[in-house]
Image (tube, rainbow, N blue to C red; front, side, top):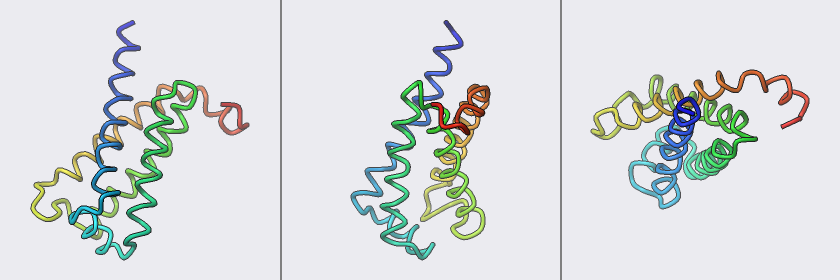
Length: 129
C-alpha cells in the first residue's frame, strides 16, 4: 500500500511539473520565447515540446501507459537538460536555475517510473500495452 502511494506521488510530481510549464509555453511567456529563440526553434519547438509534455503527463497518469509516458517524459527532459548544459546555461534569465532543477526532478521521476515498470518493456516492444 505504501509503495503504491509513493509511486503515485512520483507520477503526480512528474505530471504536475510537465503540466505547469505548459501554461508558459502555450501562452507565449517571455522566458519561453527567449529559450526557444536561443535554441533557434521558436515557435515550433516551444509549441511542439508543449504538446509532447502534455501527452507524456497524461500517459504517466494512466496506469496502463505509465511506462510509455515516462519514456516520453525522459526523452523530453534529457533534451531540456542538454539544452541547458550546452546552449542556455543552468540559469536562464536570472531564474536561479529553477527550470534546470525542475527538468532534473522530472527526469529523476521518469527514470524511477521506467525502473519500476521495467518488466513491461518487452511488451512495449511488441506493442502490447
